[in-house]
Length: 371
Image 1: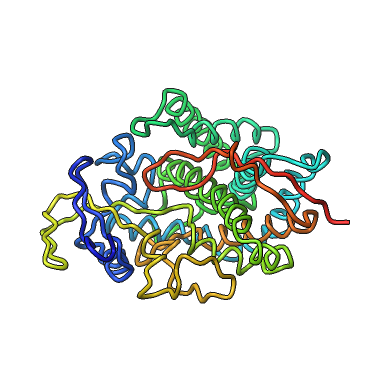
Image 2: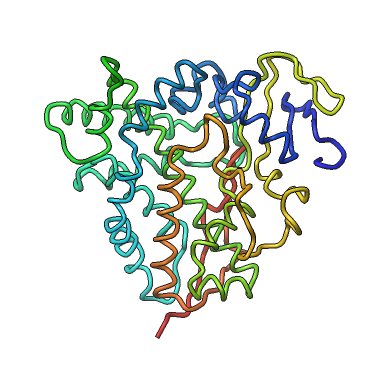
């Protein structure tokens, strides 16, 4: 597609796809012509004018997006993220150690799914007694059915239950602040302007997908990519964790595509994308564009990944990129502290089903422990 059909029309599912790095980057930066108001995913359950129910301010354009992102960023600070570092490491150990006794575990179900869920609960300020329930609801929302399309009933029920829980927690925290993100969101202000309780709950729901699912899939993709490349795996297990994370984000990012809506006719490479069309920006393809990355299909820890679009670009560049990177690095550091090498039972591995996310639901692993 990059070479022969850079502006590709998918008639079956009624969308246009951009696959070249330069075109994807330009569209990400051009929120005037490529709108986010219908959401980031083209499945019927997520696409349309109600998309902000799932994506909060990420499914908004200026000026609403500018206001919401500005207020949220006042609470979701780099300082708050960095202060979580010791707890993130403790959570990683607590999630990992119980599963190492038998010499094998499922990286996804035993570790990668629970770890970011507990980190987000720690960040938000969910009481310890409620975290098992929040984890169960989060996993139900991230359920992937083979057919894609509509959300299953249990996922819709889980969303409703989480909205109810976070609403109660927001009311409780409004009466007594703590040192957590929820308190920060309640206190965030621009003059007299503050987030409403409904807006705050929307941000917390967004964190289920943006803060949990992507980190979960990133860990599995890193584990899988290193297993496929023994020489790079040896270097990764030897301590090259930061490079391991960054090259995975380029080579096999958890989010492979971002949807937009064309607000006007857009002419590109001699083709016109009509106003109102769904446009899928293939960030996964952009990250493999040979015009930007030499030998792009090679997994290489020495690569310069500075041009990667794994966290998007422009005004919608992922606000949680620093947290996601920190979580992945600390989780993998804890893993390589106890794992000398590993083997994946790829015949038993299962993938998630999604229009834009790529990764594993299960990843059975046998490990060689460090002595």
